[in-house]
Image (cartoon, rainbow, N blue to C red; front, side, top):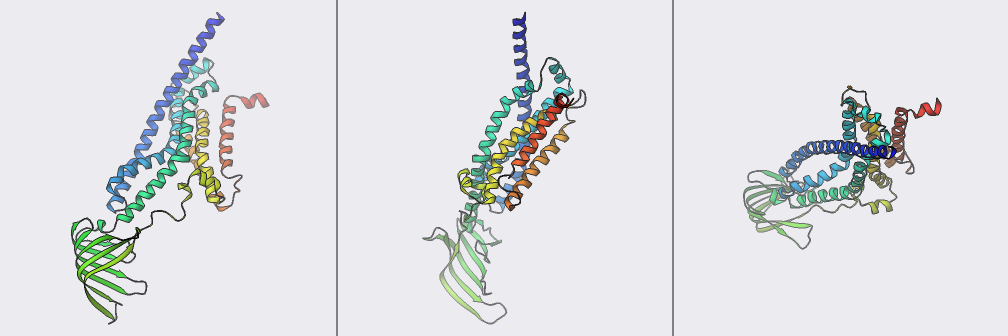
Length: 371
């Protein structure tokens, strides 16, 4: 009889483990998908606005959306896991299923055991996203934007509209656009730092490359050039058959990359406070995912018929406090207010202590220790 009872207990444990795992996993997919859809919808509108302003090429829209989605997952996976555990277990409490499981001797270990099948892969995925994929995606998005700015010269001109050129103080107008980088009936105005204004009118213009990949020429044909200081009589007029105006393209590579775009190896070698803060932030994201998963179980505990959403507001408040403290700790570390040895680790320690303390209180550990 004892042997049969043991087999029955094992079979029951496996059934309950699969049931809890299935409920949490399905909820996680739904919550994460909804949050990702909302954020990407807003991002899609922003990207279309950037395309309209020639800040991004049309063919790069979906690539930028995909790269942005990878960045969003770095934060959505932790909050999705946190909310899915609270929602799934909250439903079990509301439907009196969890009390029934506890009557079958399912304790905290019996709840966390099936959750680890989901938690550990997600923590590993978040670590990969935060440490490697996210910074690479951000770097690629910035490179796409920089390349678009390099190309947004004559290609950005619309017939009958005044357009500010890449060079500071240059305004270009063309009556017709006859081809890629070719315009007709051109008006160009530029102002030098000393106040000298130059106005050029030409029958046609075209874009030409130079030996320097960072410099292009706007070549005008059959026109006149007026140069002088407004408000004075010191103006010169020159007729030309061909007149080339050089302009420098924006540099694709940043002189000093931002910490959030740097690789982990570069962050590890740097003594700068902002880069060490970024390093701790990246390592802290998978750590916070694990802590939030641990914390979600005691936070989801409620009385029968209390409602499955009764504890969500409390959970969201805890999540907001957690990530606001992380952001504040990172800022304090960058400013030198908090030493790097303390960094943002104190926030993780505080939340982990809160989670373990809450588990202990709910399971009567304090009564056994002090009662």
